[in-house]
Amino acid sequence: MSLDPSVPPQGAAEARPPGRRDLLRLRQEIPRHVFTAAGVVVPLALLALWWGVTALGLVRPLFLPSPGAVLAEGWRQASEGILLQDAAVSVYRIMIGWLAATVVAVPVGILMGNYRLIEGALEPFISVVRYMPIVALIPLTILWAGIGDMQKIVILFLGTFFQQTLMIMDNVKNIDLSLIRAGQTLGFSDREILRRIILPAASPGIWDTLRITVGWTWTYLVVAELVAANEGLGRRIMDAQRYLATDTIVWGTLFIGFLGLVTDWAFKRAGRRLFRWNAPVRG
Amino acid sequence: MTTDPRAKVVISGLRKTFEVDGAALTAIERIDLSIPAQQFVSIVGTSGCGKSTLLNMVGGLDRPSGGRILIDGAPVTGPGRDRGFVFQSYTLFEWMTVSGNIRFALEKSALPRSEKEALVGHFIEAVGLRGFENAYPKQLSGGMRQRVAIARALVYRPSILLMDEPFGALDAQTRGMMQELLLKVWEEHRVTVLFVTHDVDEAIFLADRVIILASRPGRVKRDIAVDLPRPRAFDLVTEPRFMALKREILAEIREETLKVMAADLSAGRG
Ligand SMILES: Nc1ncnc2c1ncn2[C@@H]1O[C@H](COP(=O)(O)OP(=O)(O)OP(=O)(O)O)[C@@H](O)[C@H]1O
Ligand SMILES: [Mg+2]
Image 1 (cartoon, rainbow over the protein chains, first blue to last red):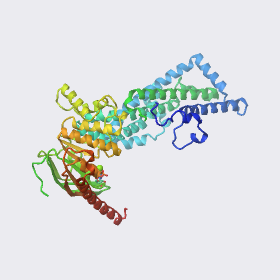
Image 2 (image 1 turned 180 degrees about the horizontal axis):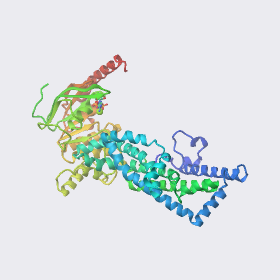
Image 3 (image 1 turned 60 degrees about the vertical axis):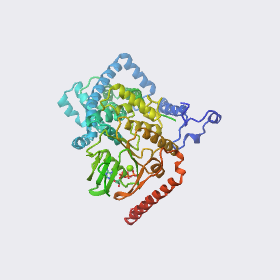
Image 4 (image 1 turned 30 degrees about the horizontal axis):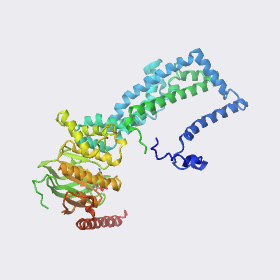
């Protein structure tokens, strides 16, 4: 840490607190605590604005409930056990949908990134499909998979798989070609190079893709639970629409966002442990 | 030009064209060259004259469009463990440690485990990386990474070492140290070296022979013997004989560069 040249030596910087101009320099590093504080201040300011607007009665609670009302709704759901039940059902669907997509997308993406024939065969198809609106596929998925959990999982799969495959293909393509050539000069076969050089070289990028795409799976939750669901975080929100229970809607949305954030954080942490060799070195 | 069939590497009538936007681009028109075993050959020339293309074909990473390359009398059909390659970009396997990278190169050899470990240790020592066995490439400086790459290319005991601007990305001081280190290792392990560089000082300092390629399309323009004694020390570059060679080579390259610029201008590309 102390070897980091971007941290100014103590004394010089300590003597004079950074002025406003120092904080807004093109691509310039800023003190870590300022960086963190900025990230806390903005949500807090939005929260204060929200609270102020509702406390002053500037908008009707029907349009925007107060933070207190939203928290109370969250508390109600938690104490009645609905929250945990909804979360469990939704997390299960997301995990299975995302895992199913990943299990197929990783090998397919890797093959597409390495063999032009497979890329040529699949890329046009995937590129078209990924623009199709998933909501429009709900009737079909019901026909195929019924109205149980499976249908929700199919929607989550469809929402995740195609983008994920193309991104993994790119991850694989982005590795340095000379790594492959180095493998060839050392006498390794194509298969060995694929498994022992291309795969590990691409794995930090693939991991990042998995992290980003699990976020997309979360965003498809409401779509997945749009039809024929009795429980789930997304279902709760759609039900609330009927009764204009805006506090339930806002709570549900924020809670989904929060769970997404936790997932993202877990992925980042695991990635740092898995790929220690890839840690950026400072100094 | 006649080629000696007994040489280590014999290149005859070598030609390479690439297809670019449907048109054929001749990268190498014709190269004839024979290189005796254990010779250190530098290859210089203006950018785009086909140096990397030549090296890749000797390495078996690229196929000639015409002519042939013989190594010990046998034609090159692909990469092989009789040749080691060091690239300009750092091509270490970043998920392996320093010793892991070097050990990986020995995986395809039939040596007993203990002998492999001894070789790994020997080459780590030879390139001055003792103490860094368990470091990951990202933790190393550019010069140290290229030392690992050199050790990795030599550890399986190829008889030919192909180096494509291996020190091109290093600062001048580090580069000087690396040149001395390379010579030291080479004195001990006498392999045939084909060394591509942009740096005329480097070309002369290292080599027994400097090949100047003419560009667009690539041909051998001059083949100059470096009659300087070995072992060589860094202050060689100030000696009159060295400077005379340097003047001669620089003049040849300058002439080529001017030709390329004139051609670009008349083609409206300059
Ligand atoms: N894969 C390729 N496809 C098309 N053209 C290529 C390819 N590889 C090289 N060329 C062309 O062949 C010529 C020789 O390229 P090469 O890379 O061998 O030059 P070089 O002497 O190594 O140049 P530099 O000093 O810049 O590395 C150039 O005109 C280049 O554009
Ligand atoms: Mg080159």
